[in-house]
Every structure is written in structure tokens, then in C-alpha cells.
Image 1 (cartoon, helix red, strand yellow):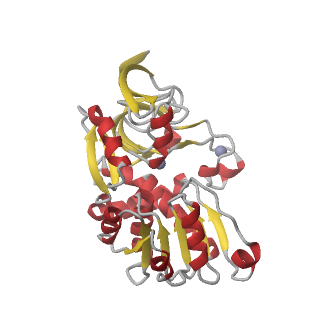
Image 2: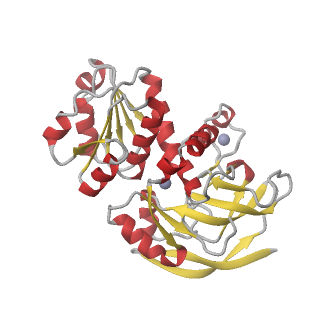
Image 3: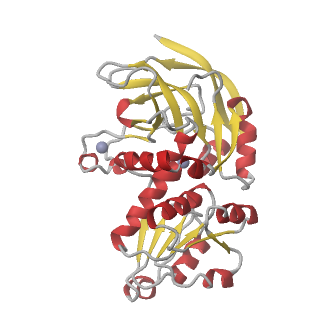
Length: 339
Ligand SMILES: [Zn+2]
Ligand SMILES: [Zn+2]
């Protein structure tokens, strides 16, 4: 049995059409969700411009409307979708590193249909239930914003347990997530500098208690001082280089944003100051319960990162506004749901 519904199809060059799409009923271990909202992500850019065979969207929240054999989630369960459909049995998964699964089945929204459509078929293992206290659109904060950022902070702590100052390059949604998560984790005594070239973004970041830094002005970046930890969410070579140049002794640069490269002078950049350069990719499924507790406690503050919400009929407008750079997180919502 299957059902069909209208879903957006990304045909490339920034064009999105609506087409009929067929959704299977959930198989063993699977759940069928009615999607309520999906957050727009910078990573969607490639599908937006190059097109996609599947329905994109990897930051979805929704409600269980169909259950496969071997599942325990009741119909009506609300929750979010973890991007990686991890295997649960490989060496990485067995120690909880589900973001580094060696045999993942799929990436939701990239290799199978994702959250810009009305339905999404997931494995129960990559569905994370939420409590009634969380508004369903706000639940998407658990994904890239809180999850990816929280994981990057934990990566930094692996090499730097005594963090007293932070520099973030890039004040887009991930940069804002890093700022908010750092505030919640370290309190207001730890200064968090955040740089961007967009005055709009800097002002928005300032409203979250970040110290704004004009990324186009090298002197402004130097004035940050010598932060213990730097994060790059911009993906820019220049931004990474600038972060390495100001990093304090024993510091670490954690790269969170995909994009360009960076060149290291091993003696100067790594050996002498004992710097580390780390990558941080998405997050572990088991990090979500602690983040859910944070979201329950600080929902209004964290959800302020969502600056726009568009119904799916206006998904093109959602992308245009998002790509203008003057947004926090943008949600695409589905109508006619009872979440
Ligand atoms: Zn994303
Ligand atoms: Zn695995």
C-alpha cells in the first residue's frame, strides 16, 4: 500500500516545482511521519541550485501517522528526524558515534525523501521523540542548531577542558547555534566573539549576547585577543586562517562549516602553540536527550533563532529570503496538520 501527495521537487537553478510523490507505508522498524516543519539549511544550497532526485530537507519535525512491524512508537508521537539513518551495529555506532556510522543506510533528504514533503519515512532508530512542552516547529532547533553546535563544543572540550574565551567565525544559523549553546554551557562570564560580514547578522548575534566582530576588518579580528577556542562556521579559508592567527596557546580551531580549505604552517600553527585543528560533523543521536532538556528549559530564547516561517506553498520565497543572508533559521511548514 502507498499514498501519494504533492511535494516540492528541486529541479535546479533555484527552481522548485510541485509534483505528485508516492510514499510507501512503513516497513519493518520504520515509521511514517506527517511532517510539520523543516528548517532551511545552508547545505540545501547544492540541491537548490543543482536539483535533487529526492525531496530535500534534513531538519524535519513531525508526527507519527503509521508504524511498521517491530516499532514501539505510538501513532501521534511527535518528534524530529536525525539526518543519518545509522546502522546501530558497526564499530562507531556501538560506542555511540552514530554520526560516524560505517554502514549508514541513508542521509535523510539527500539519498531518500526528506522533510520538505508532506510525509517522511524514517527508521524508528533515527526518529527522536519530543515532549508536549515543545512547539513542533521549535523542535527543529534540536537538529543543526543545537545538535551540531553542541557536538562542536564537546569536540573542543576534548582538547581544551578550561575554556574561558570563544571566537566564532560566521554568524549564520550554525554560528548562532554555537553562540547560544556556548552561553548555556559556560554562562555569561565566558566572552563569545562572533564575526560576520553582514551587519544584519551581527546585530542579530548581539541580541544573543555575542560580541560582534566585523569580519571584513582584520584589525577588528585582532582586537578579539587570543581566544581559547575558535569555531569556523563560515567555511571560508580567510576566516579559518584569521582564527588560527589569533588562537591562544593550547587553543583549538573546530571547523563546523563545509566549504573551502586552509593551509597550515605546522611549526607555527600546530607545534609551538600546541594548537589542534578539528572537524566536527553533525552530532551523535545520544546527544539529543540533553539538548531536549535544554530546549524545554530555554525554549523561548532558543527559538528566537527562528526568524521566519513560510508555508510550503511559499518554499521558493523561503529560500530567497534565506539566501539573502538576513535571516536566522527559516522554517518551511506544512499545513493541515494536527501537531
Ligand atoms: Zn543542515
Ligand atoms: Zn553504524
